[in-house]
Image (cartoon, rainbow, N blue to C red; front, side, top):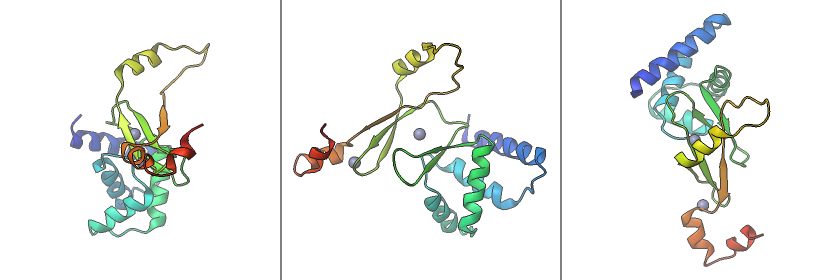
Length: 160
Ligand SMILES: [Zn+2]
Ligand SMILES: [Zn+2]
């Protein structure tokens, strides 16, 4: 799907969701949705709020929080904590299947594609359980931190 088509598809889902629940279809909600779908990667609510402001779109932090939780309920974004205190979010529609490498030192998250692993996971069966998606996090040290670790004590805390 092209970016515009993805955005349109997401907006349709949101409209349907809000119509079913008699929610007000405020322009703020659609503006936030647009920004989320322009964002390639994972984002923090704080950084999304900053990006909107940088575009000259001033909405309160509260509105951003509420809208993201609405998008989460509508199945448009997914919450990720990556073992950190502050959650990040990512869009679901238009995003291809991927897994995450999480640096336990600096918190950097890198998306990876692993077709072999996906094939393996698709074949897995766990009794009568019906899987809808698989979320795999690989924790460790990113290249930068690993290089630094060679020169400091970081490595010690990551060795078991
Ligand atoms: Zn790192
Ligand atoms: Zn991701």
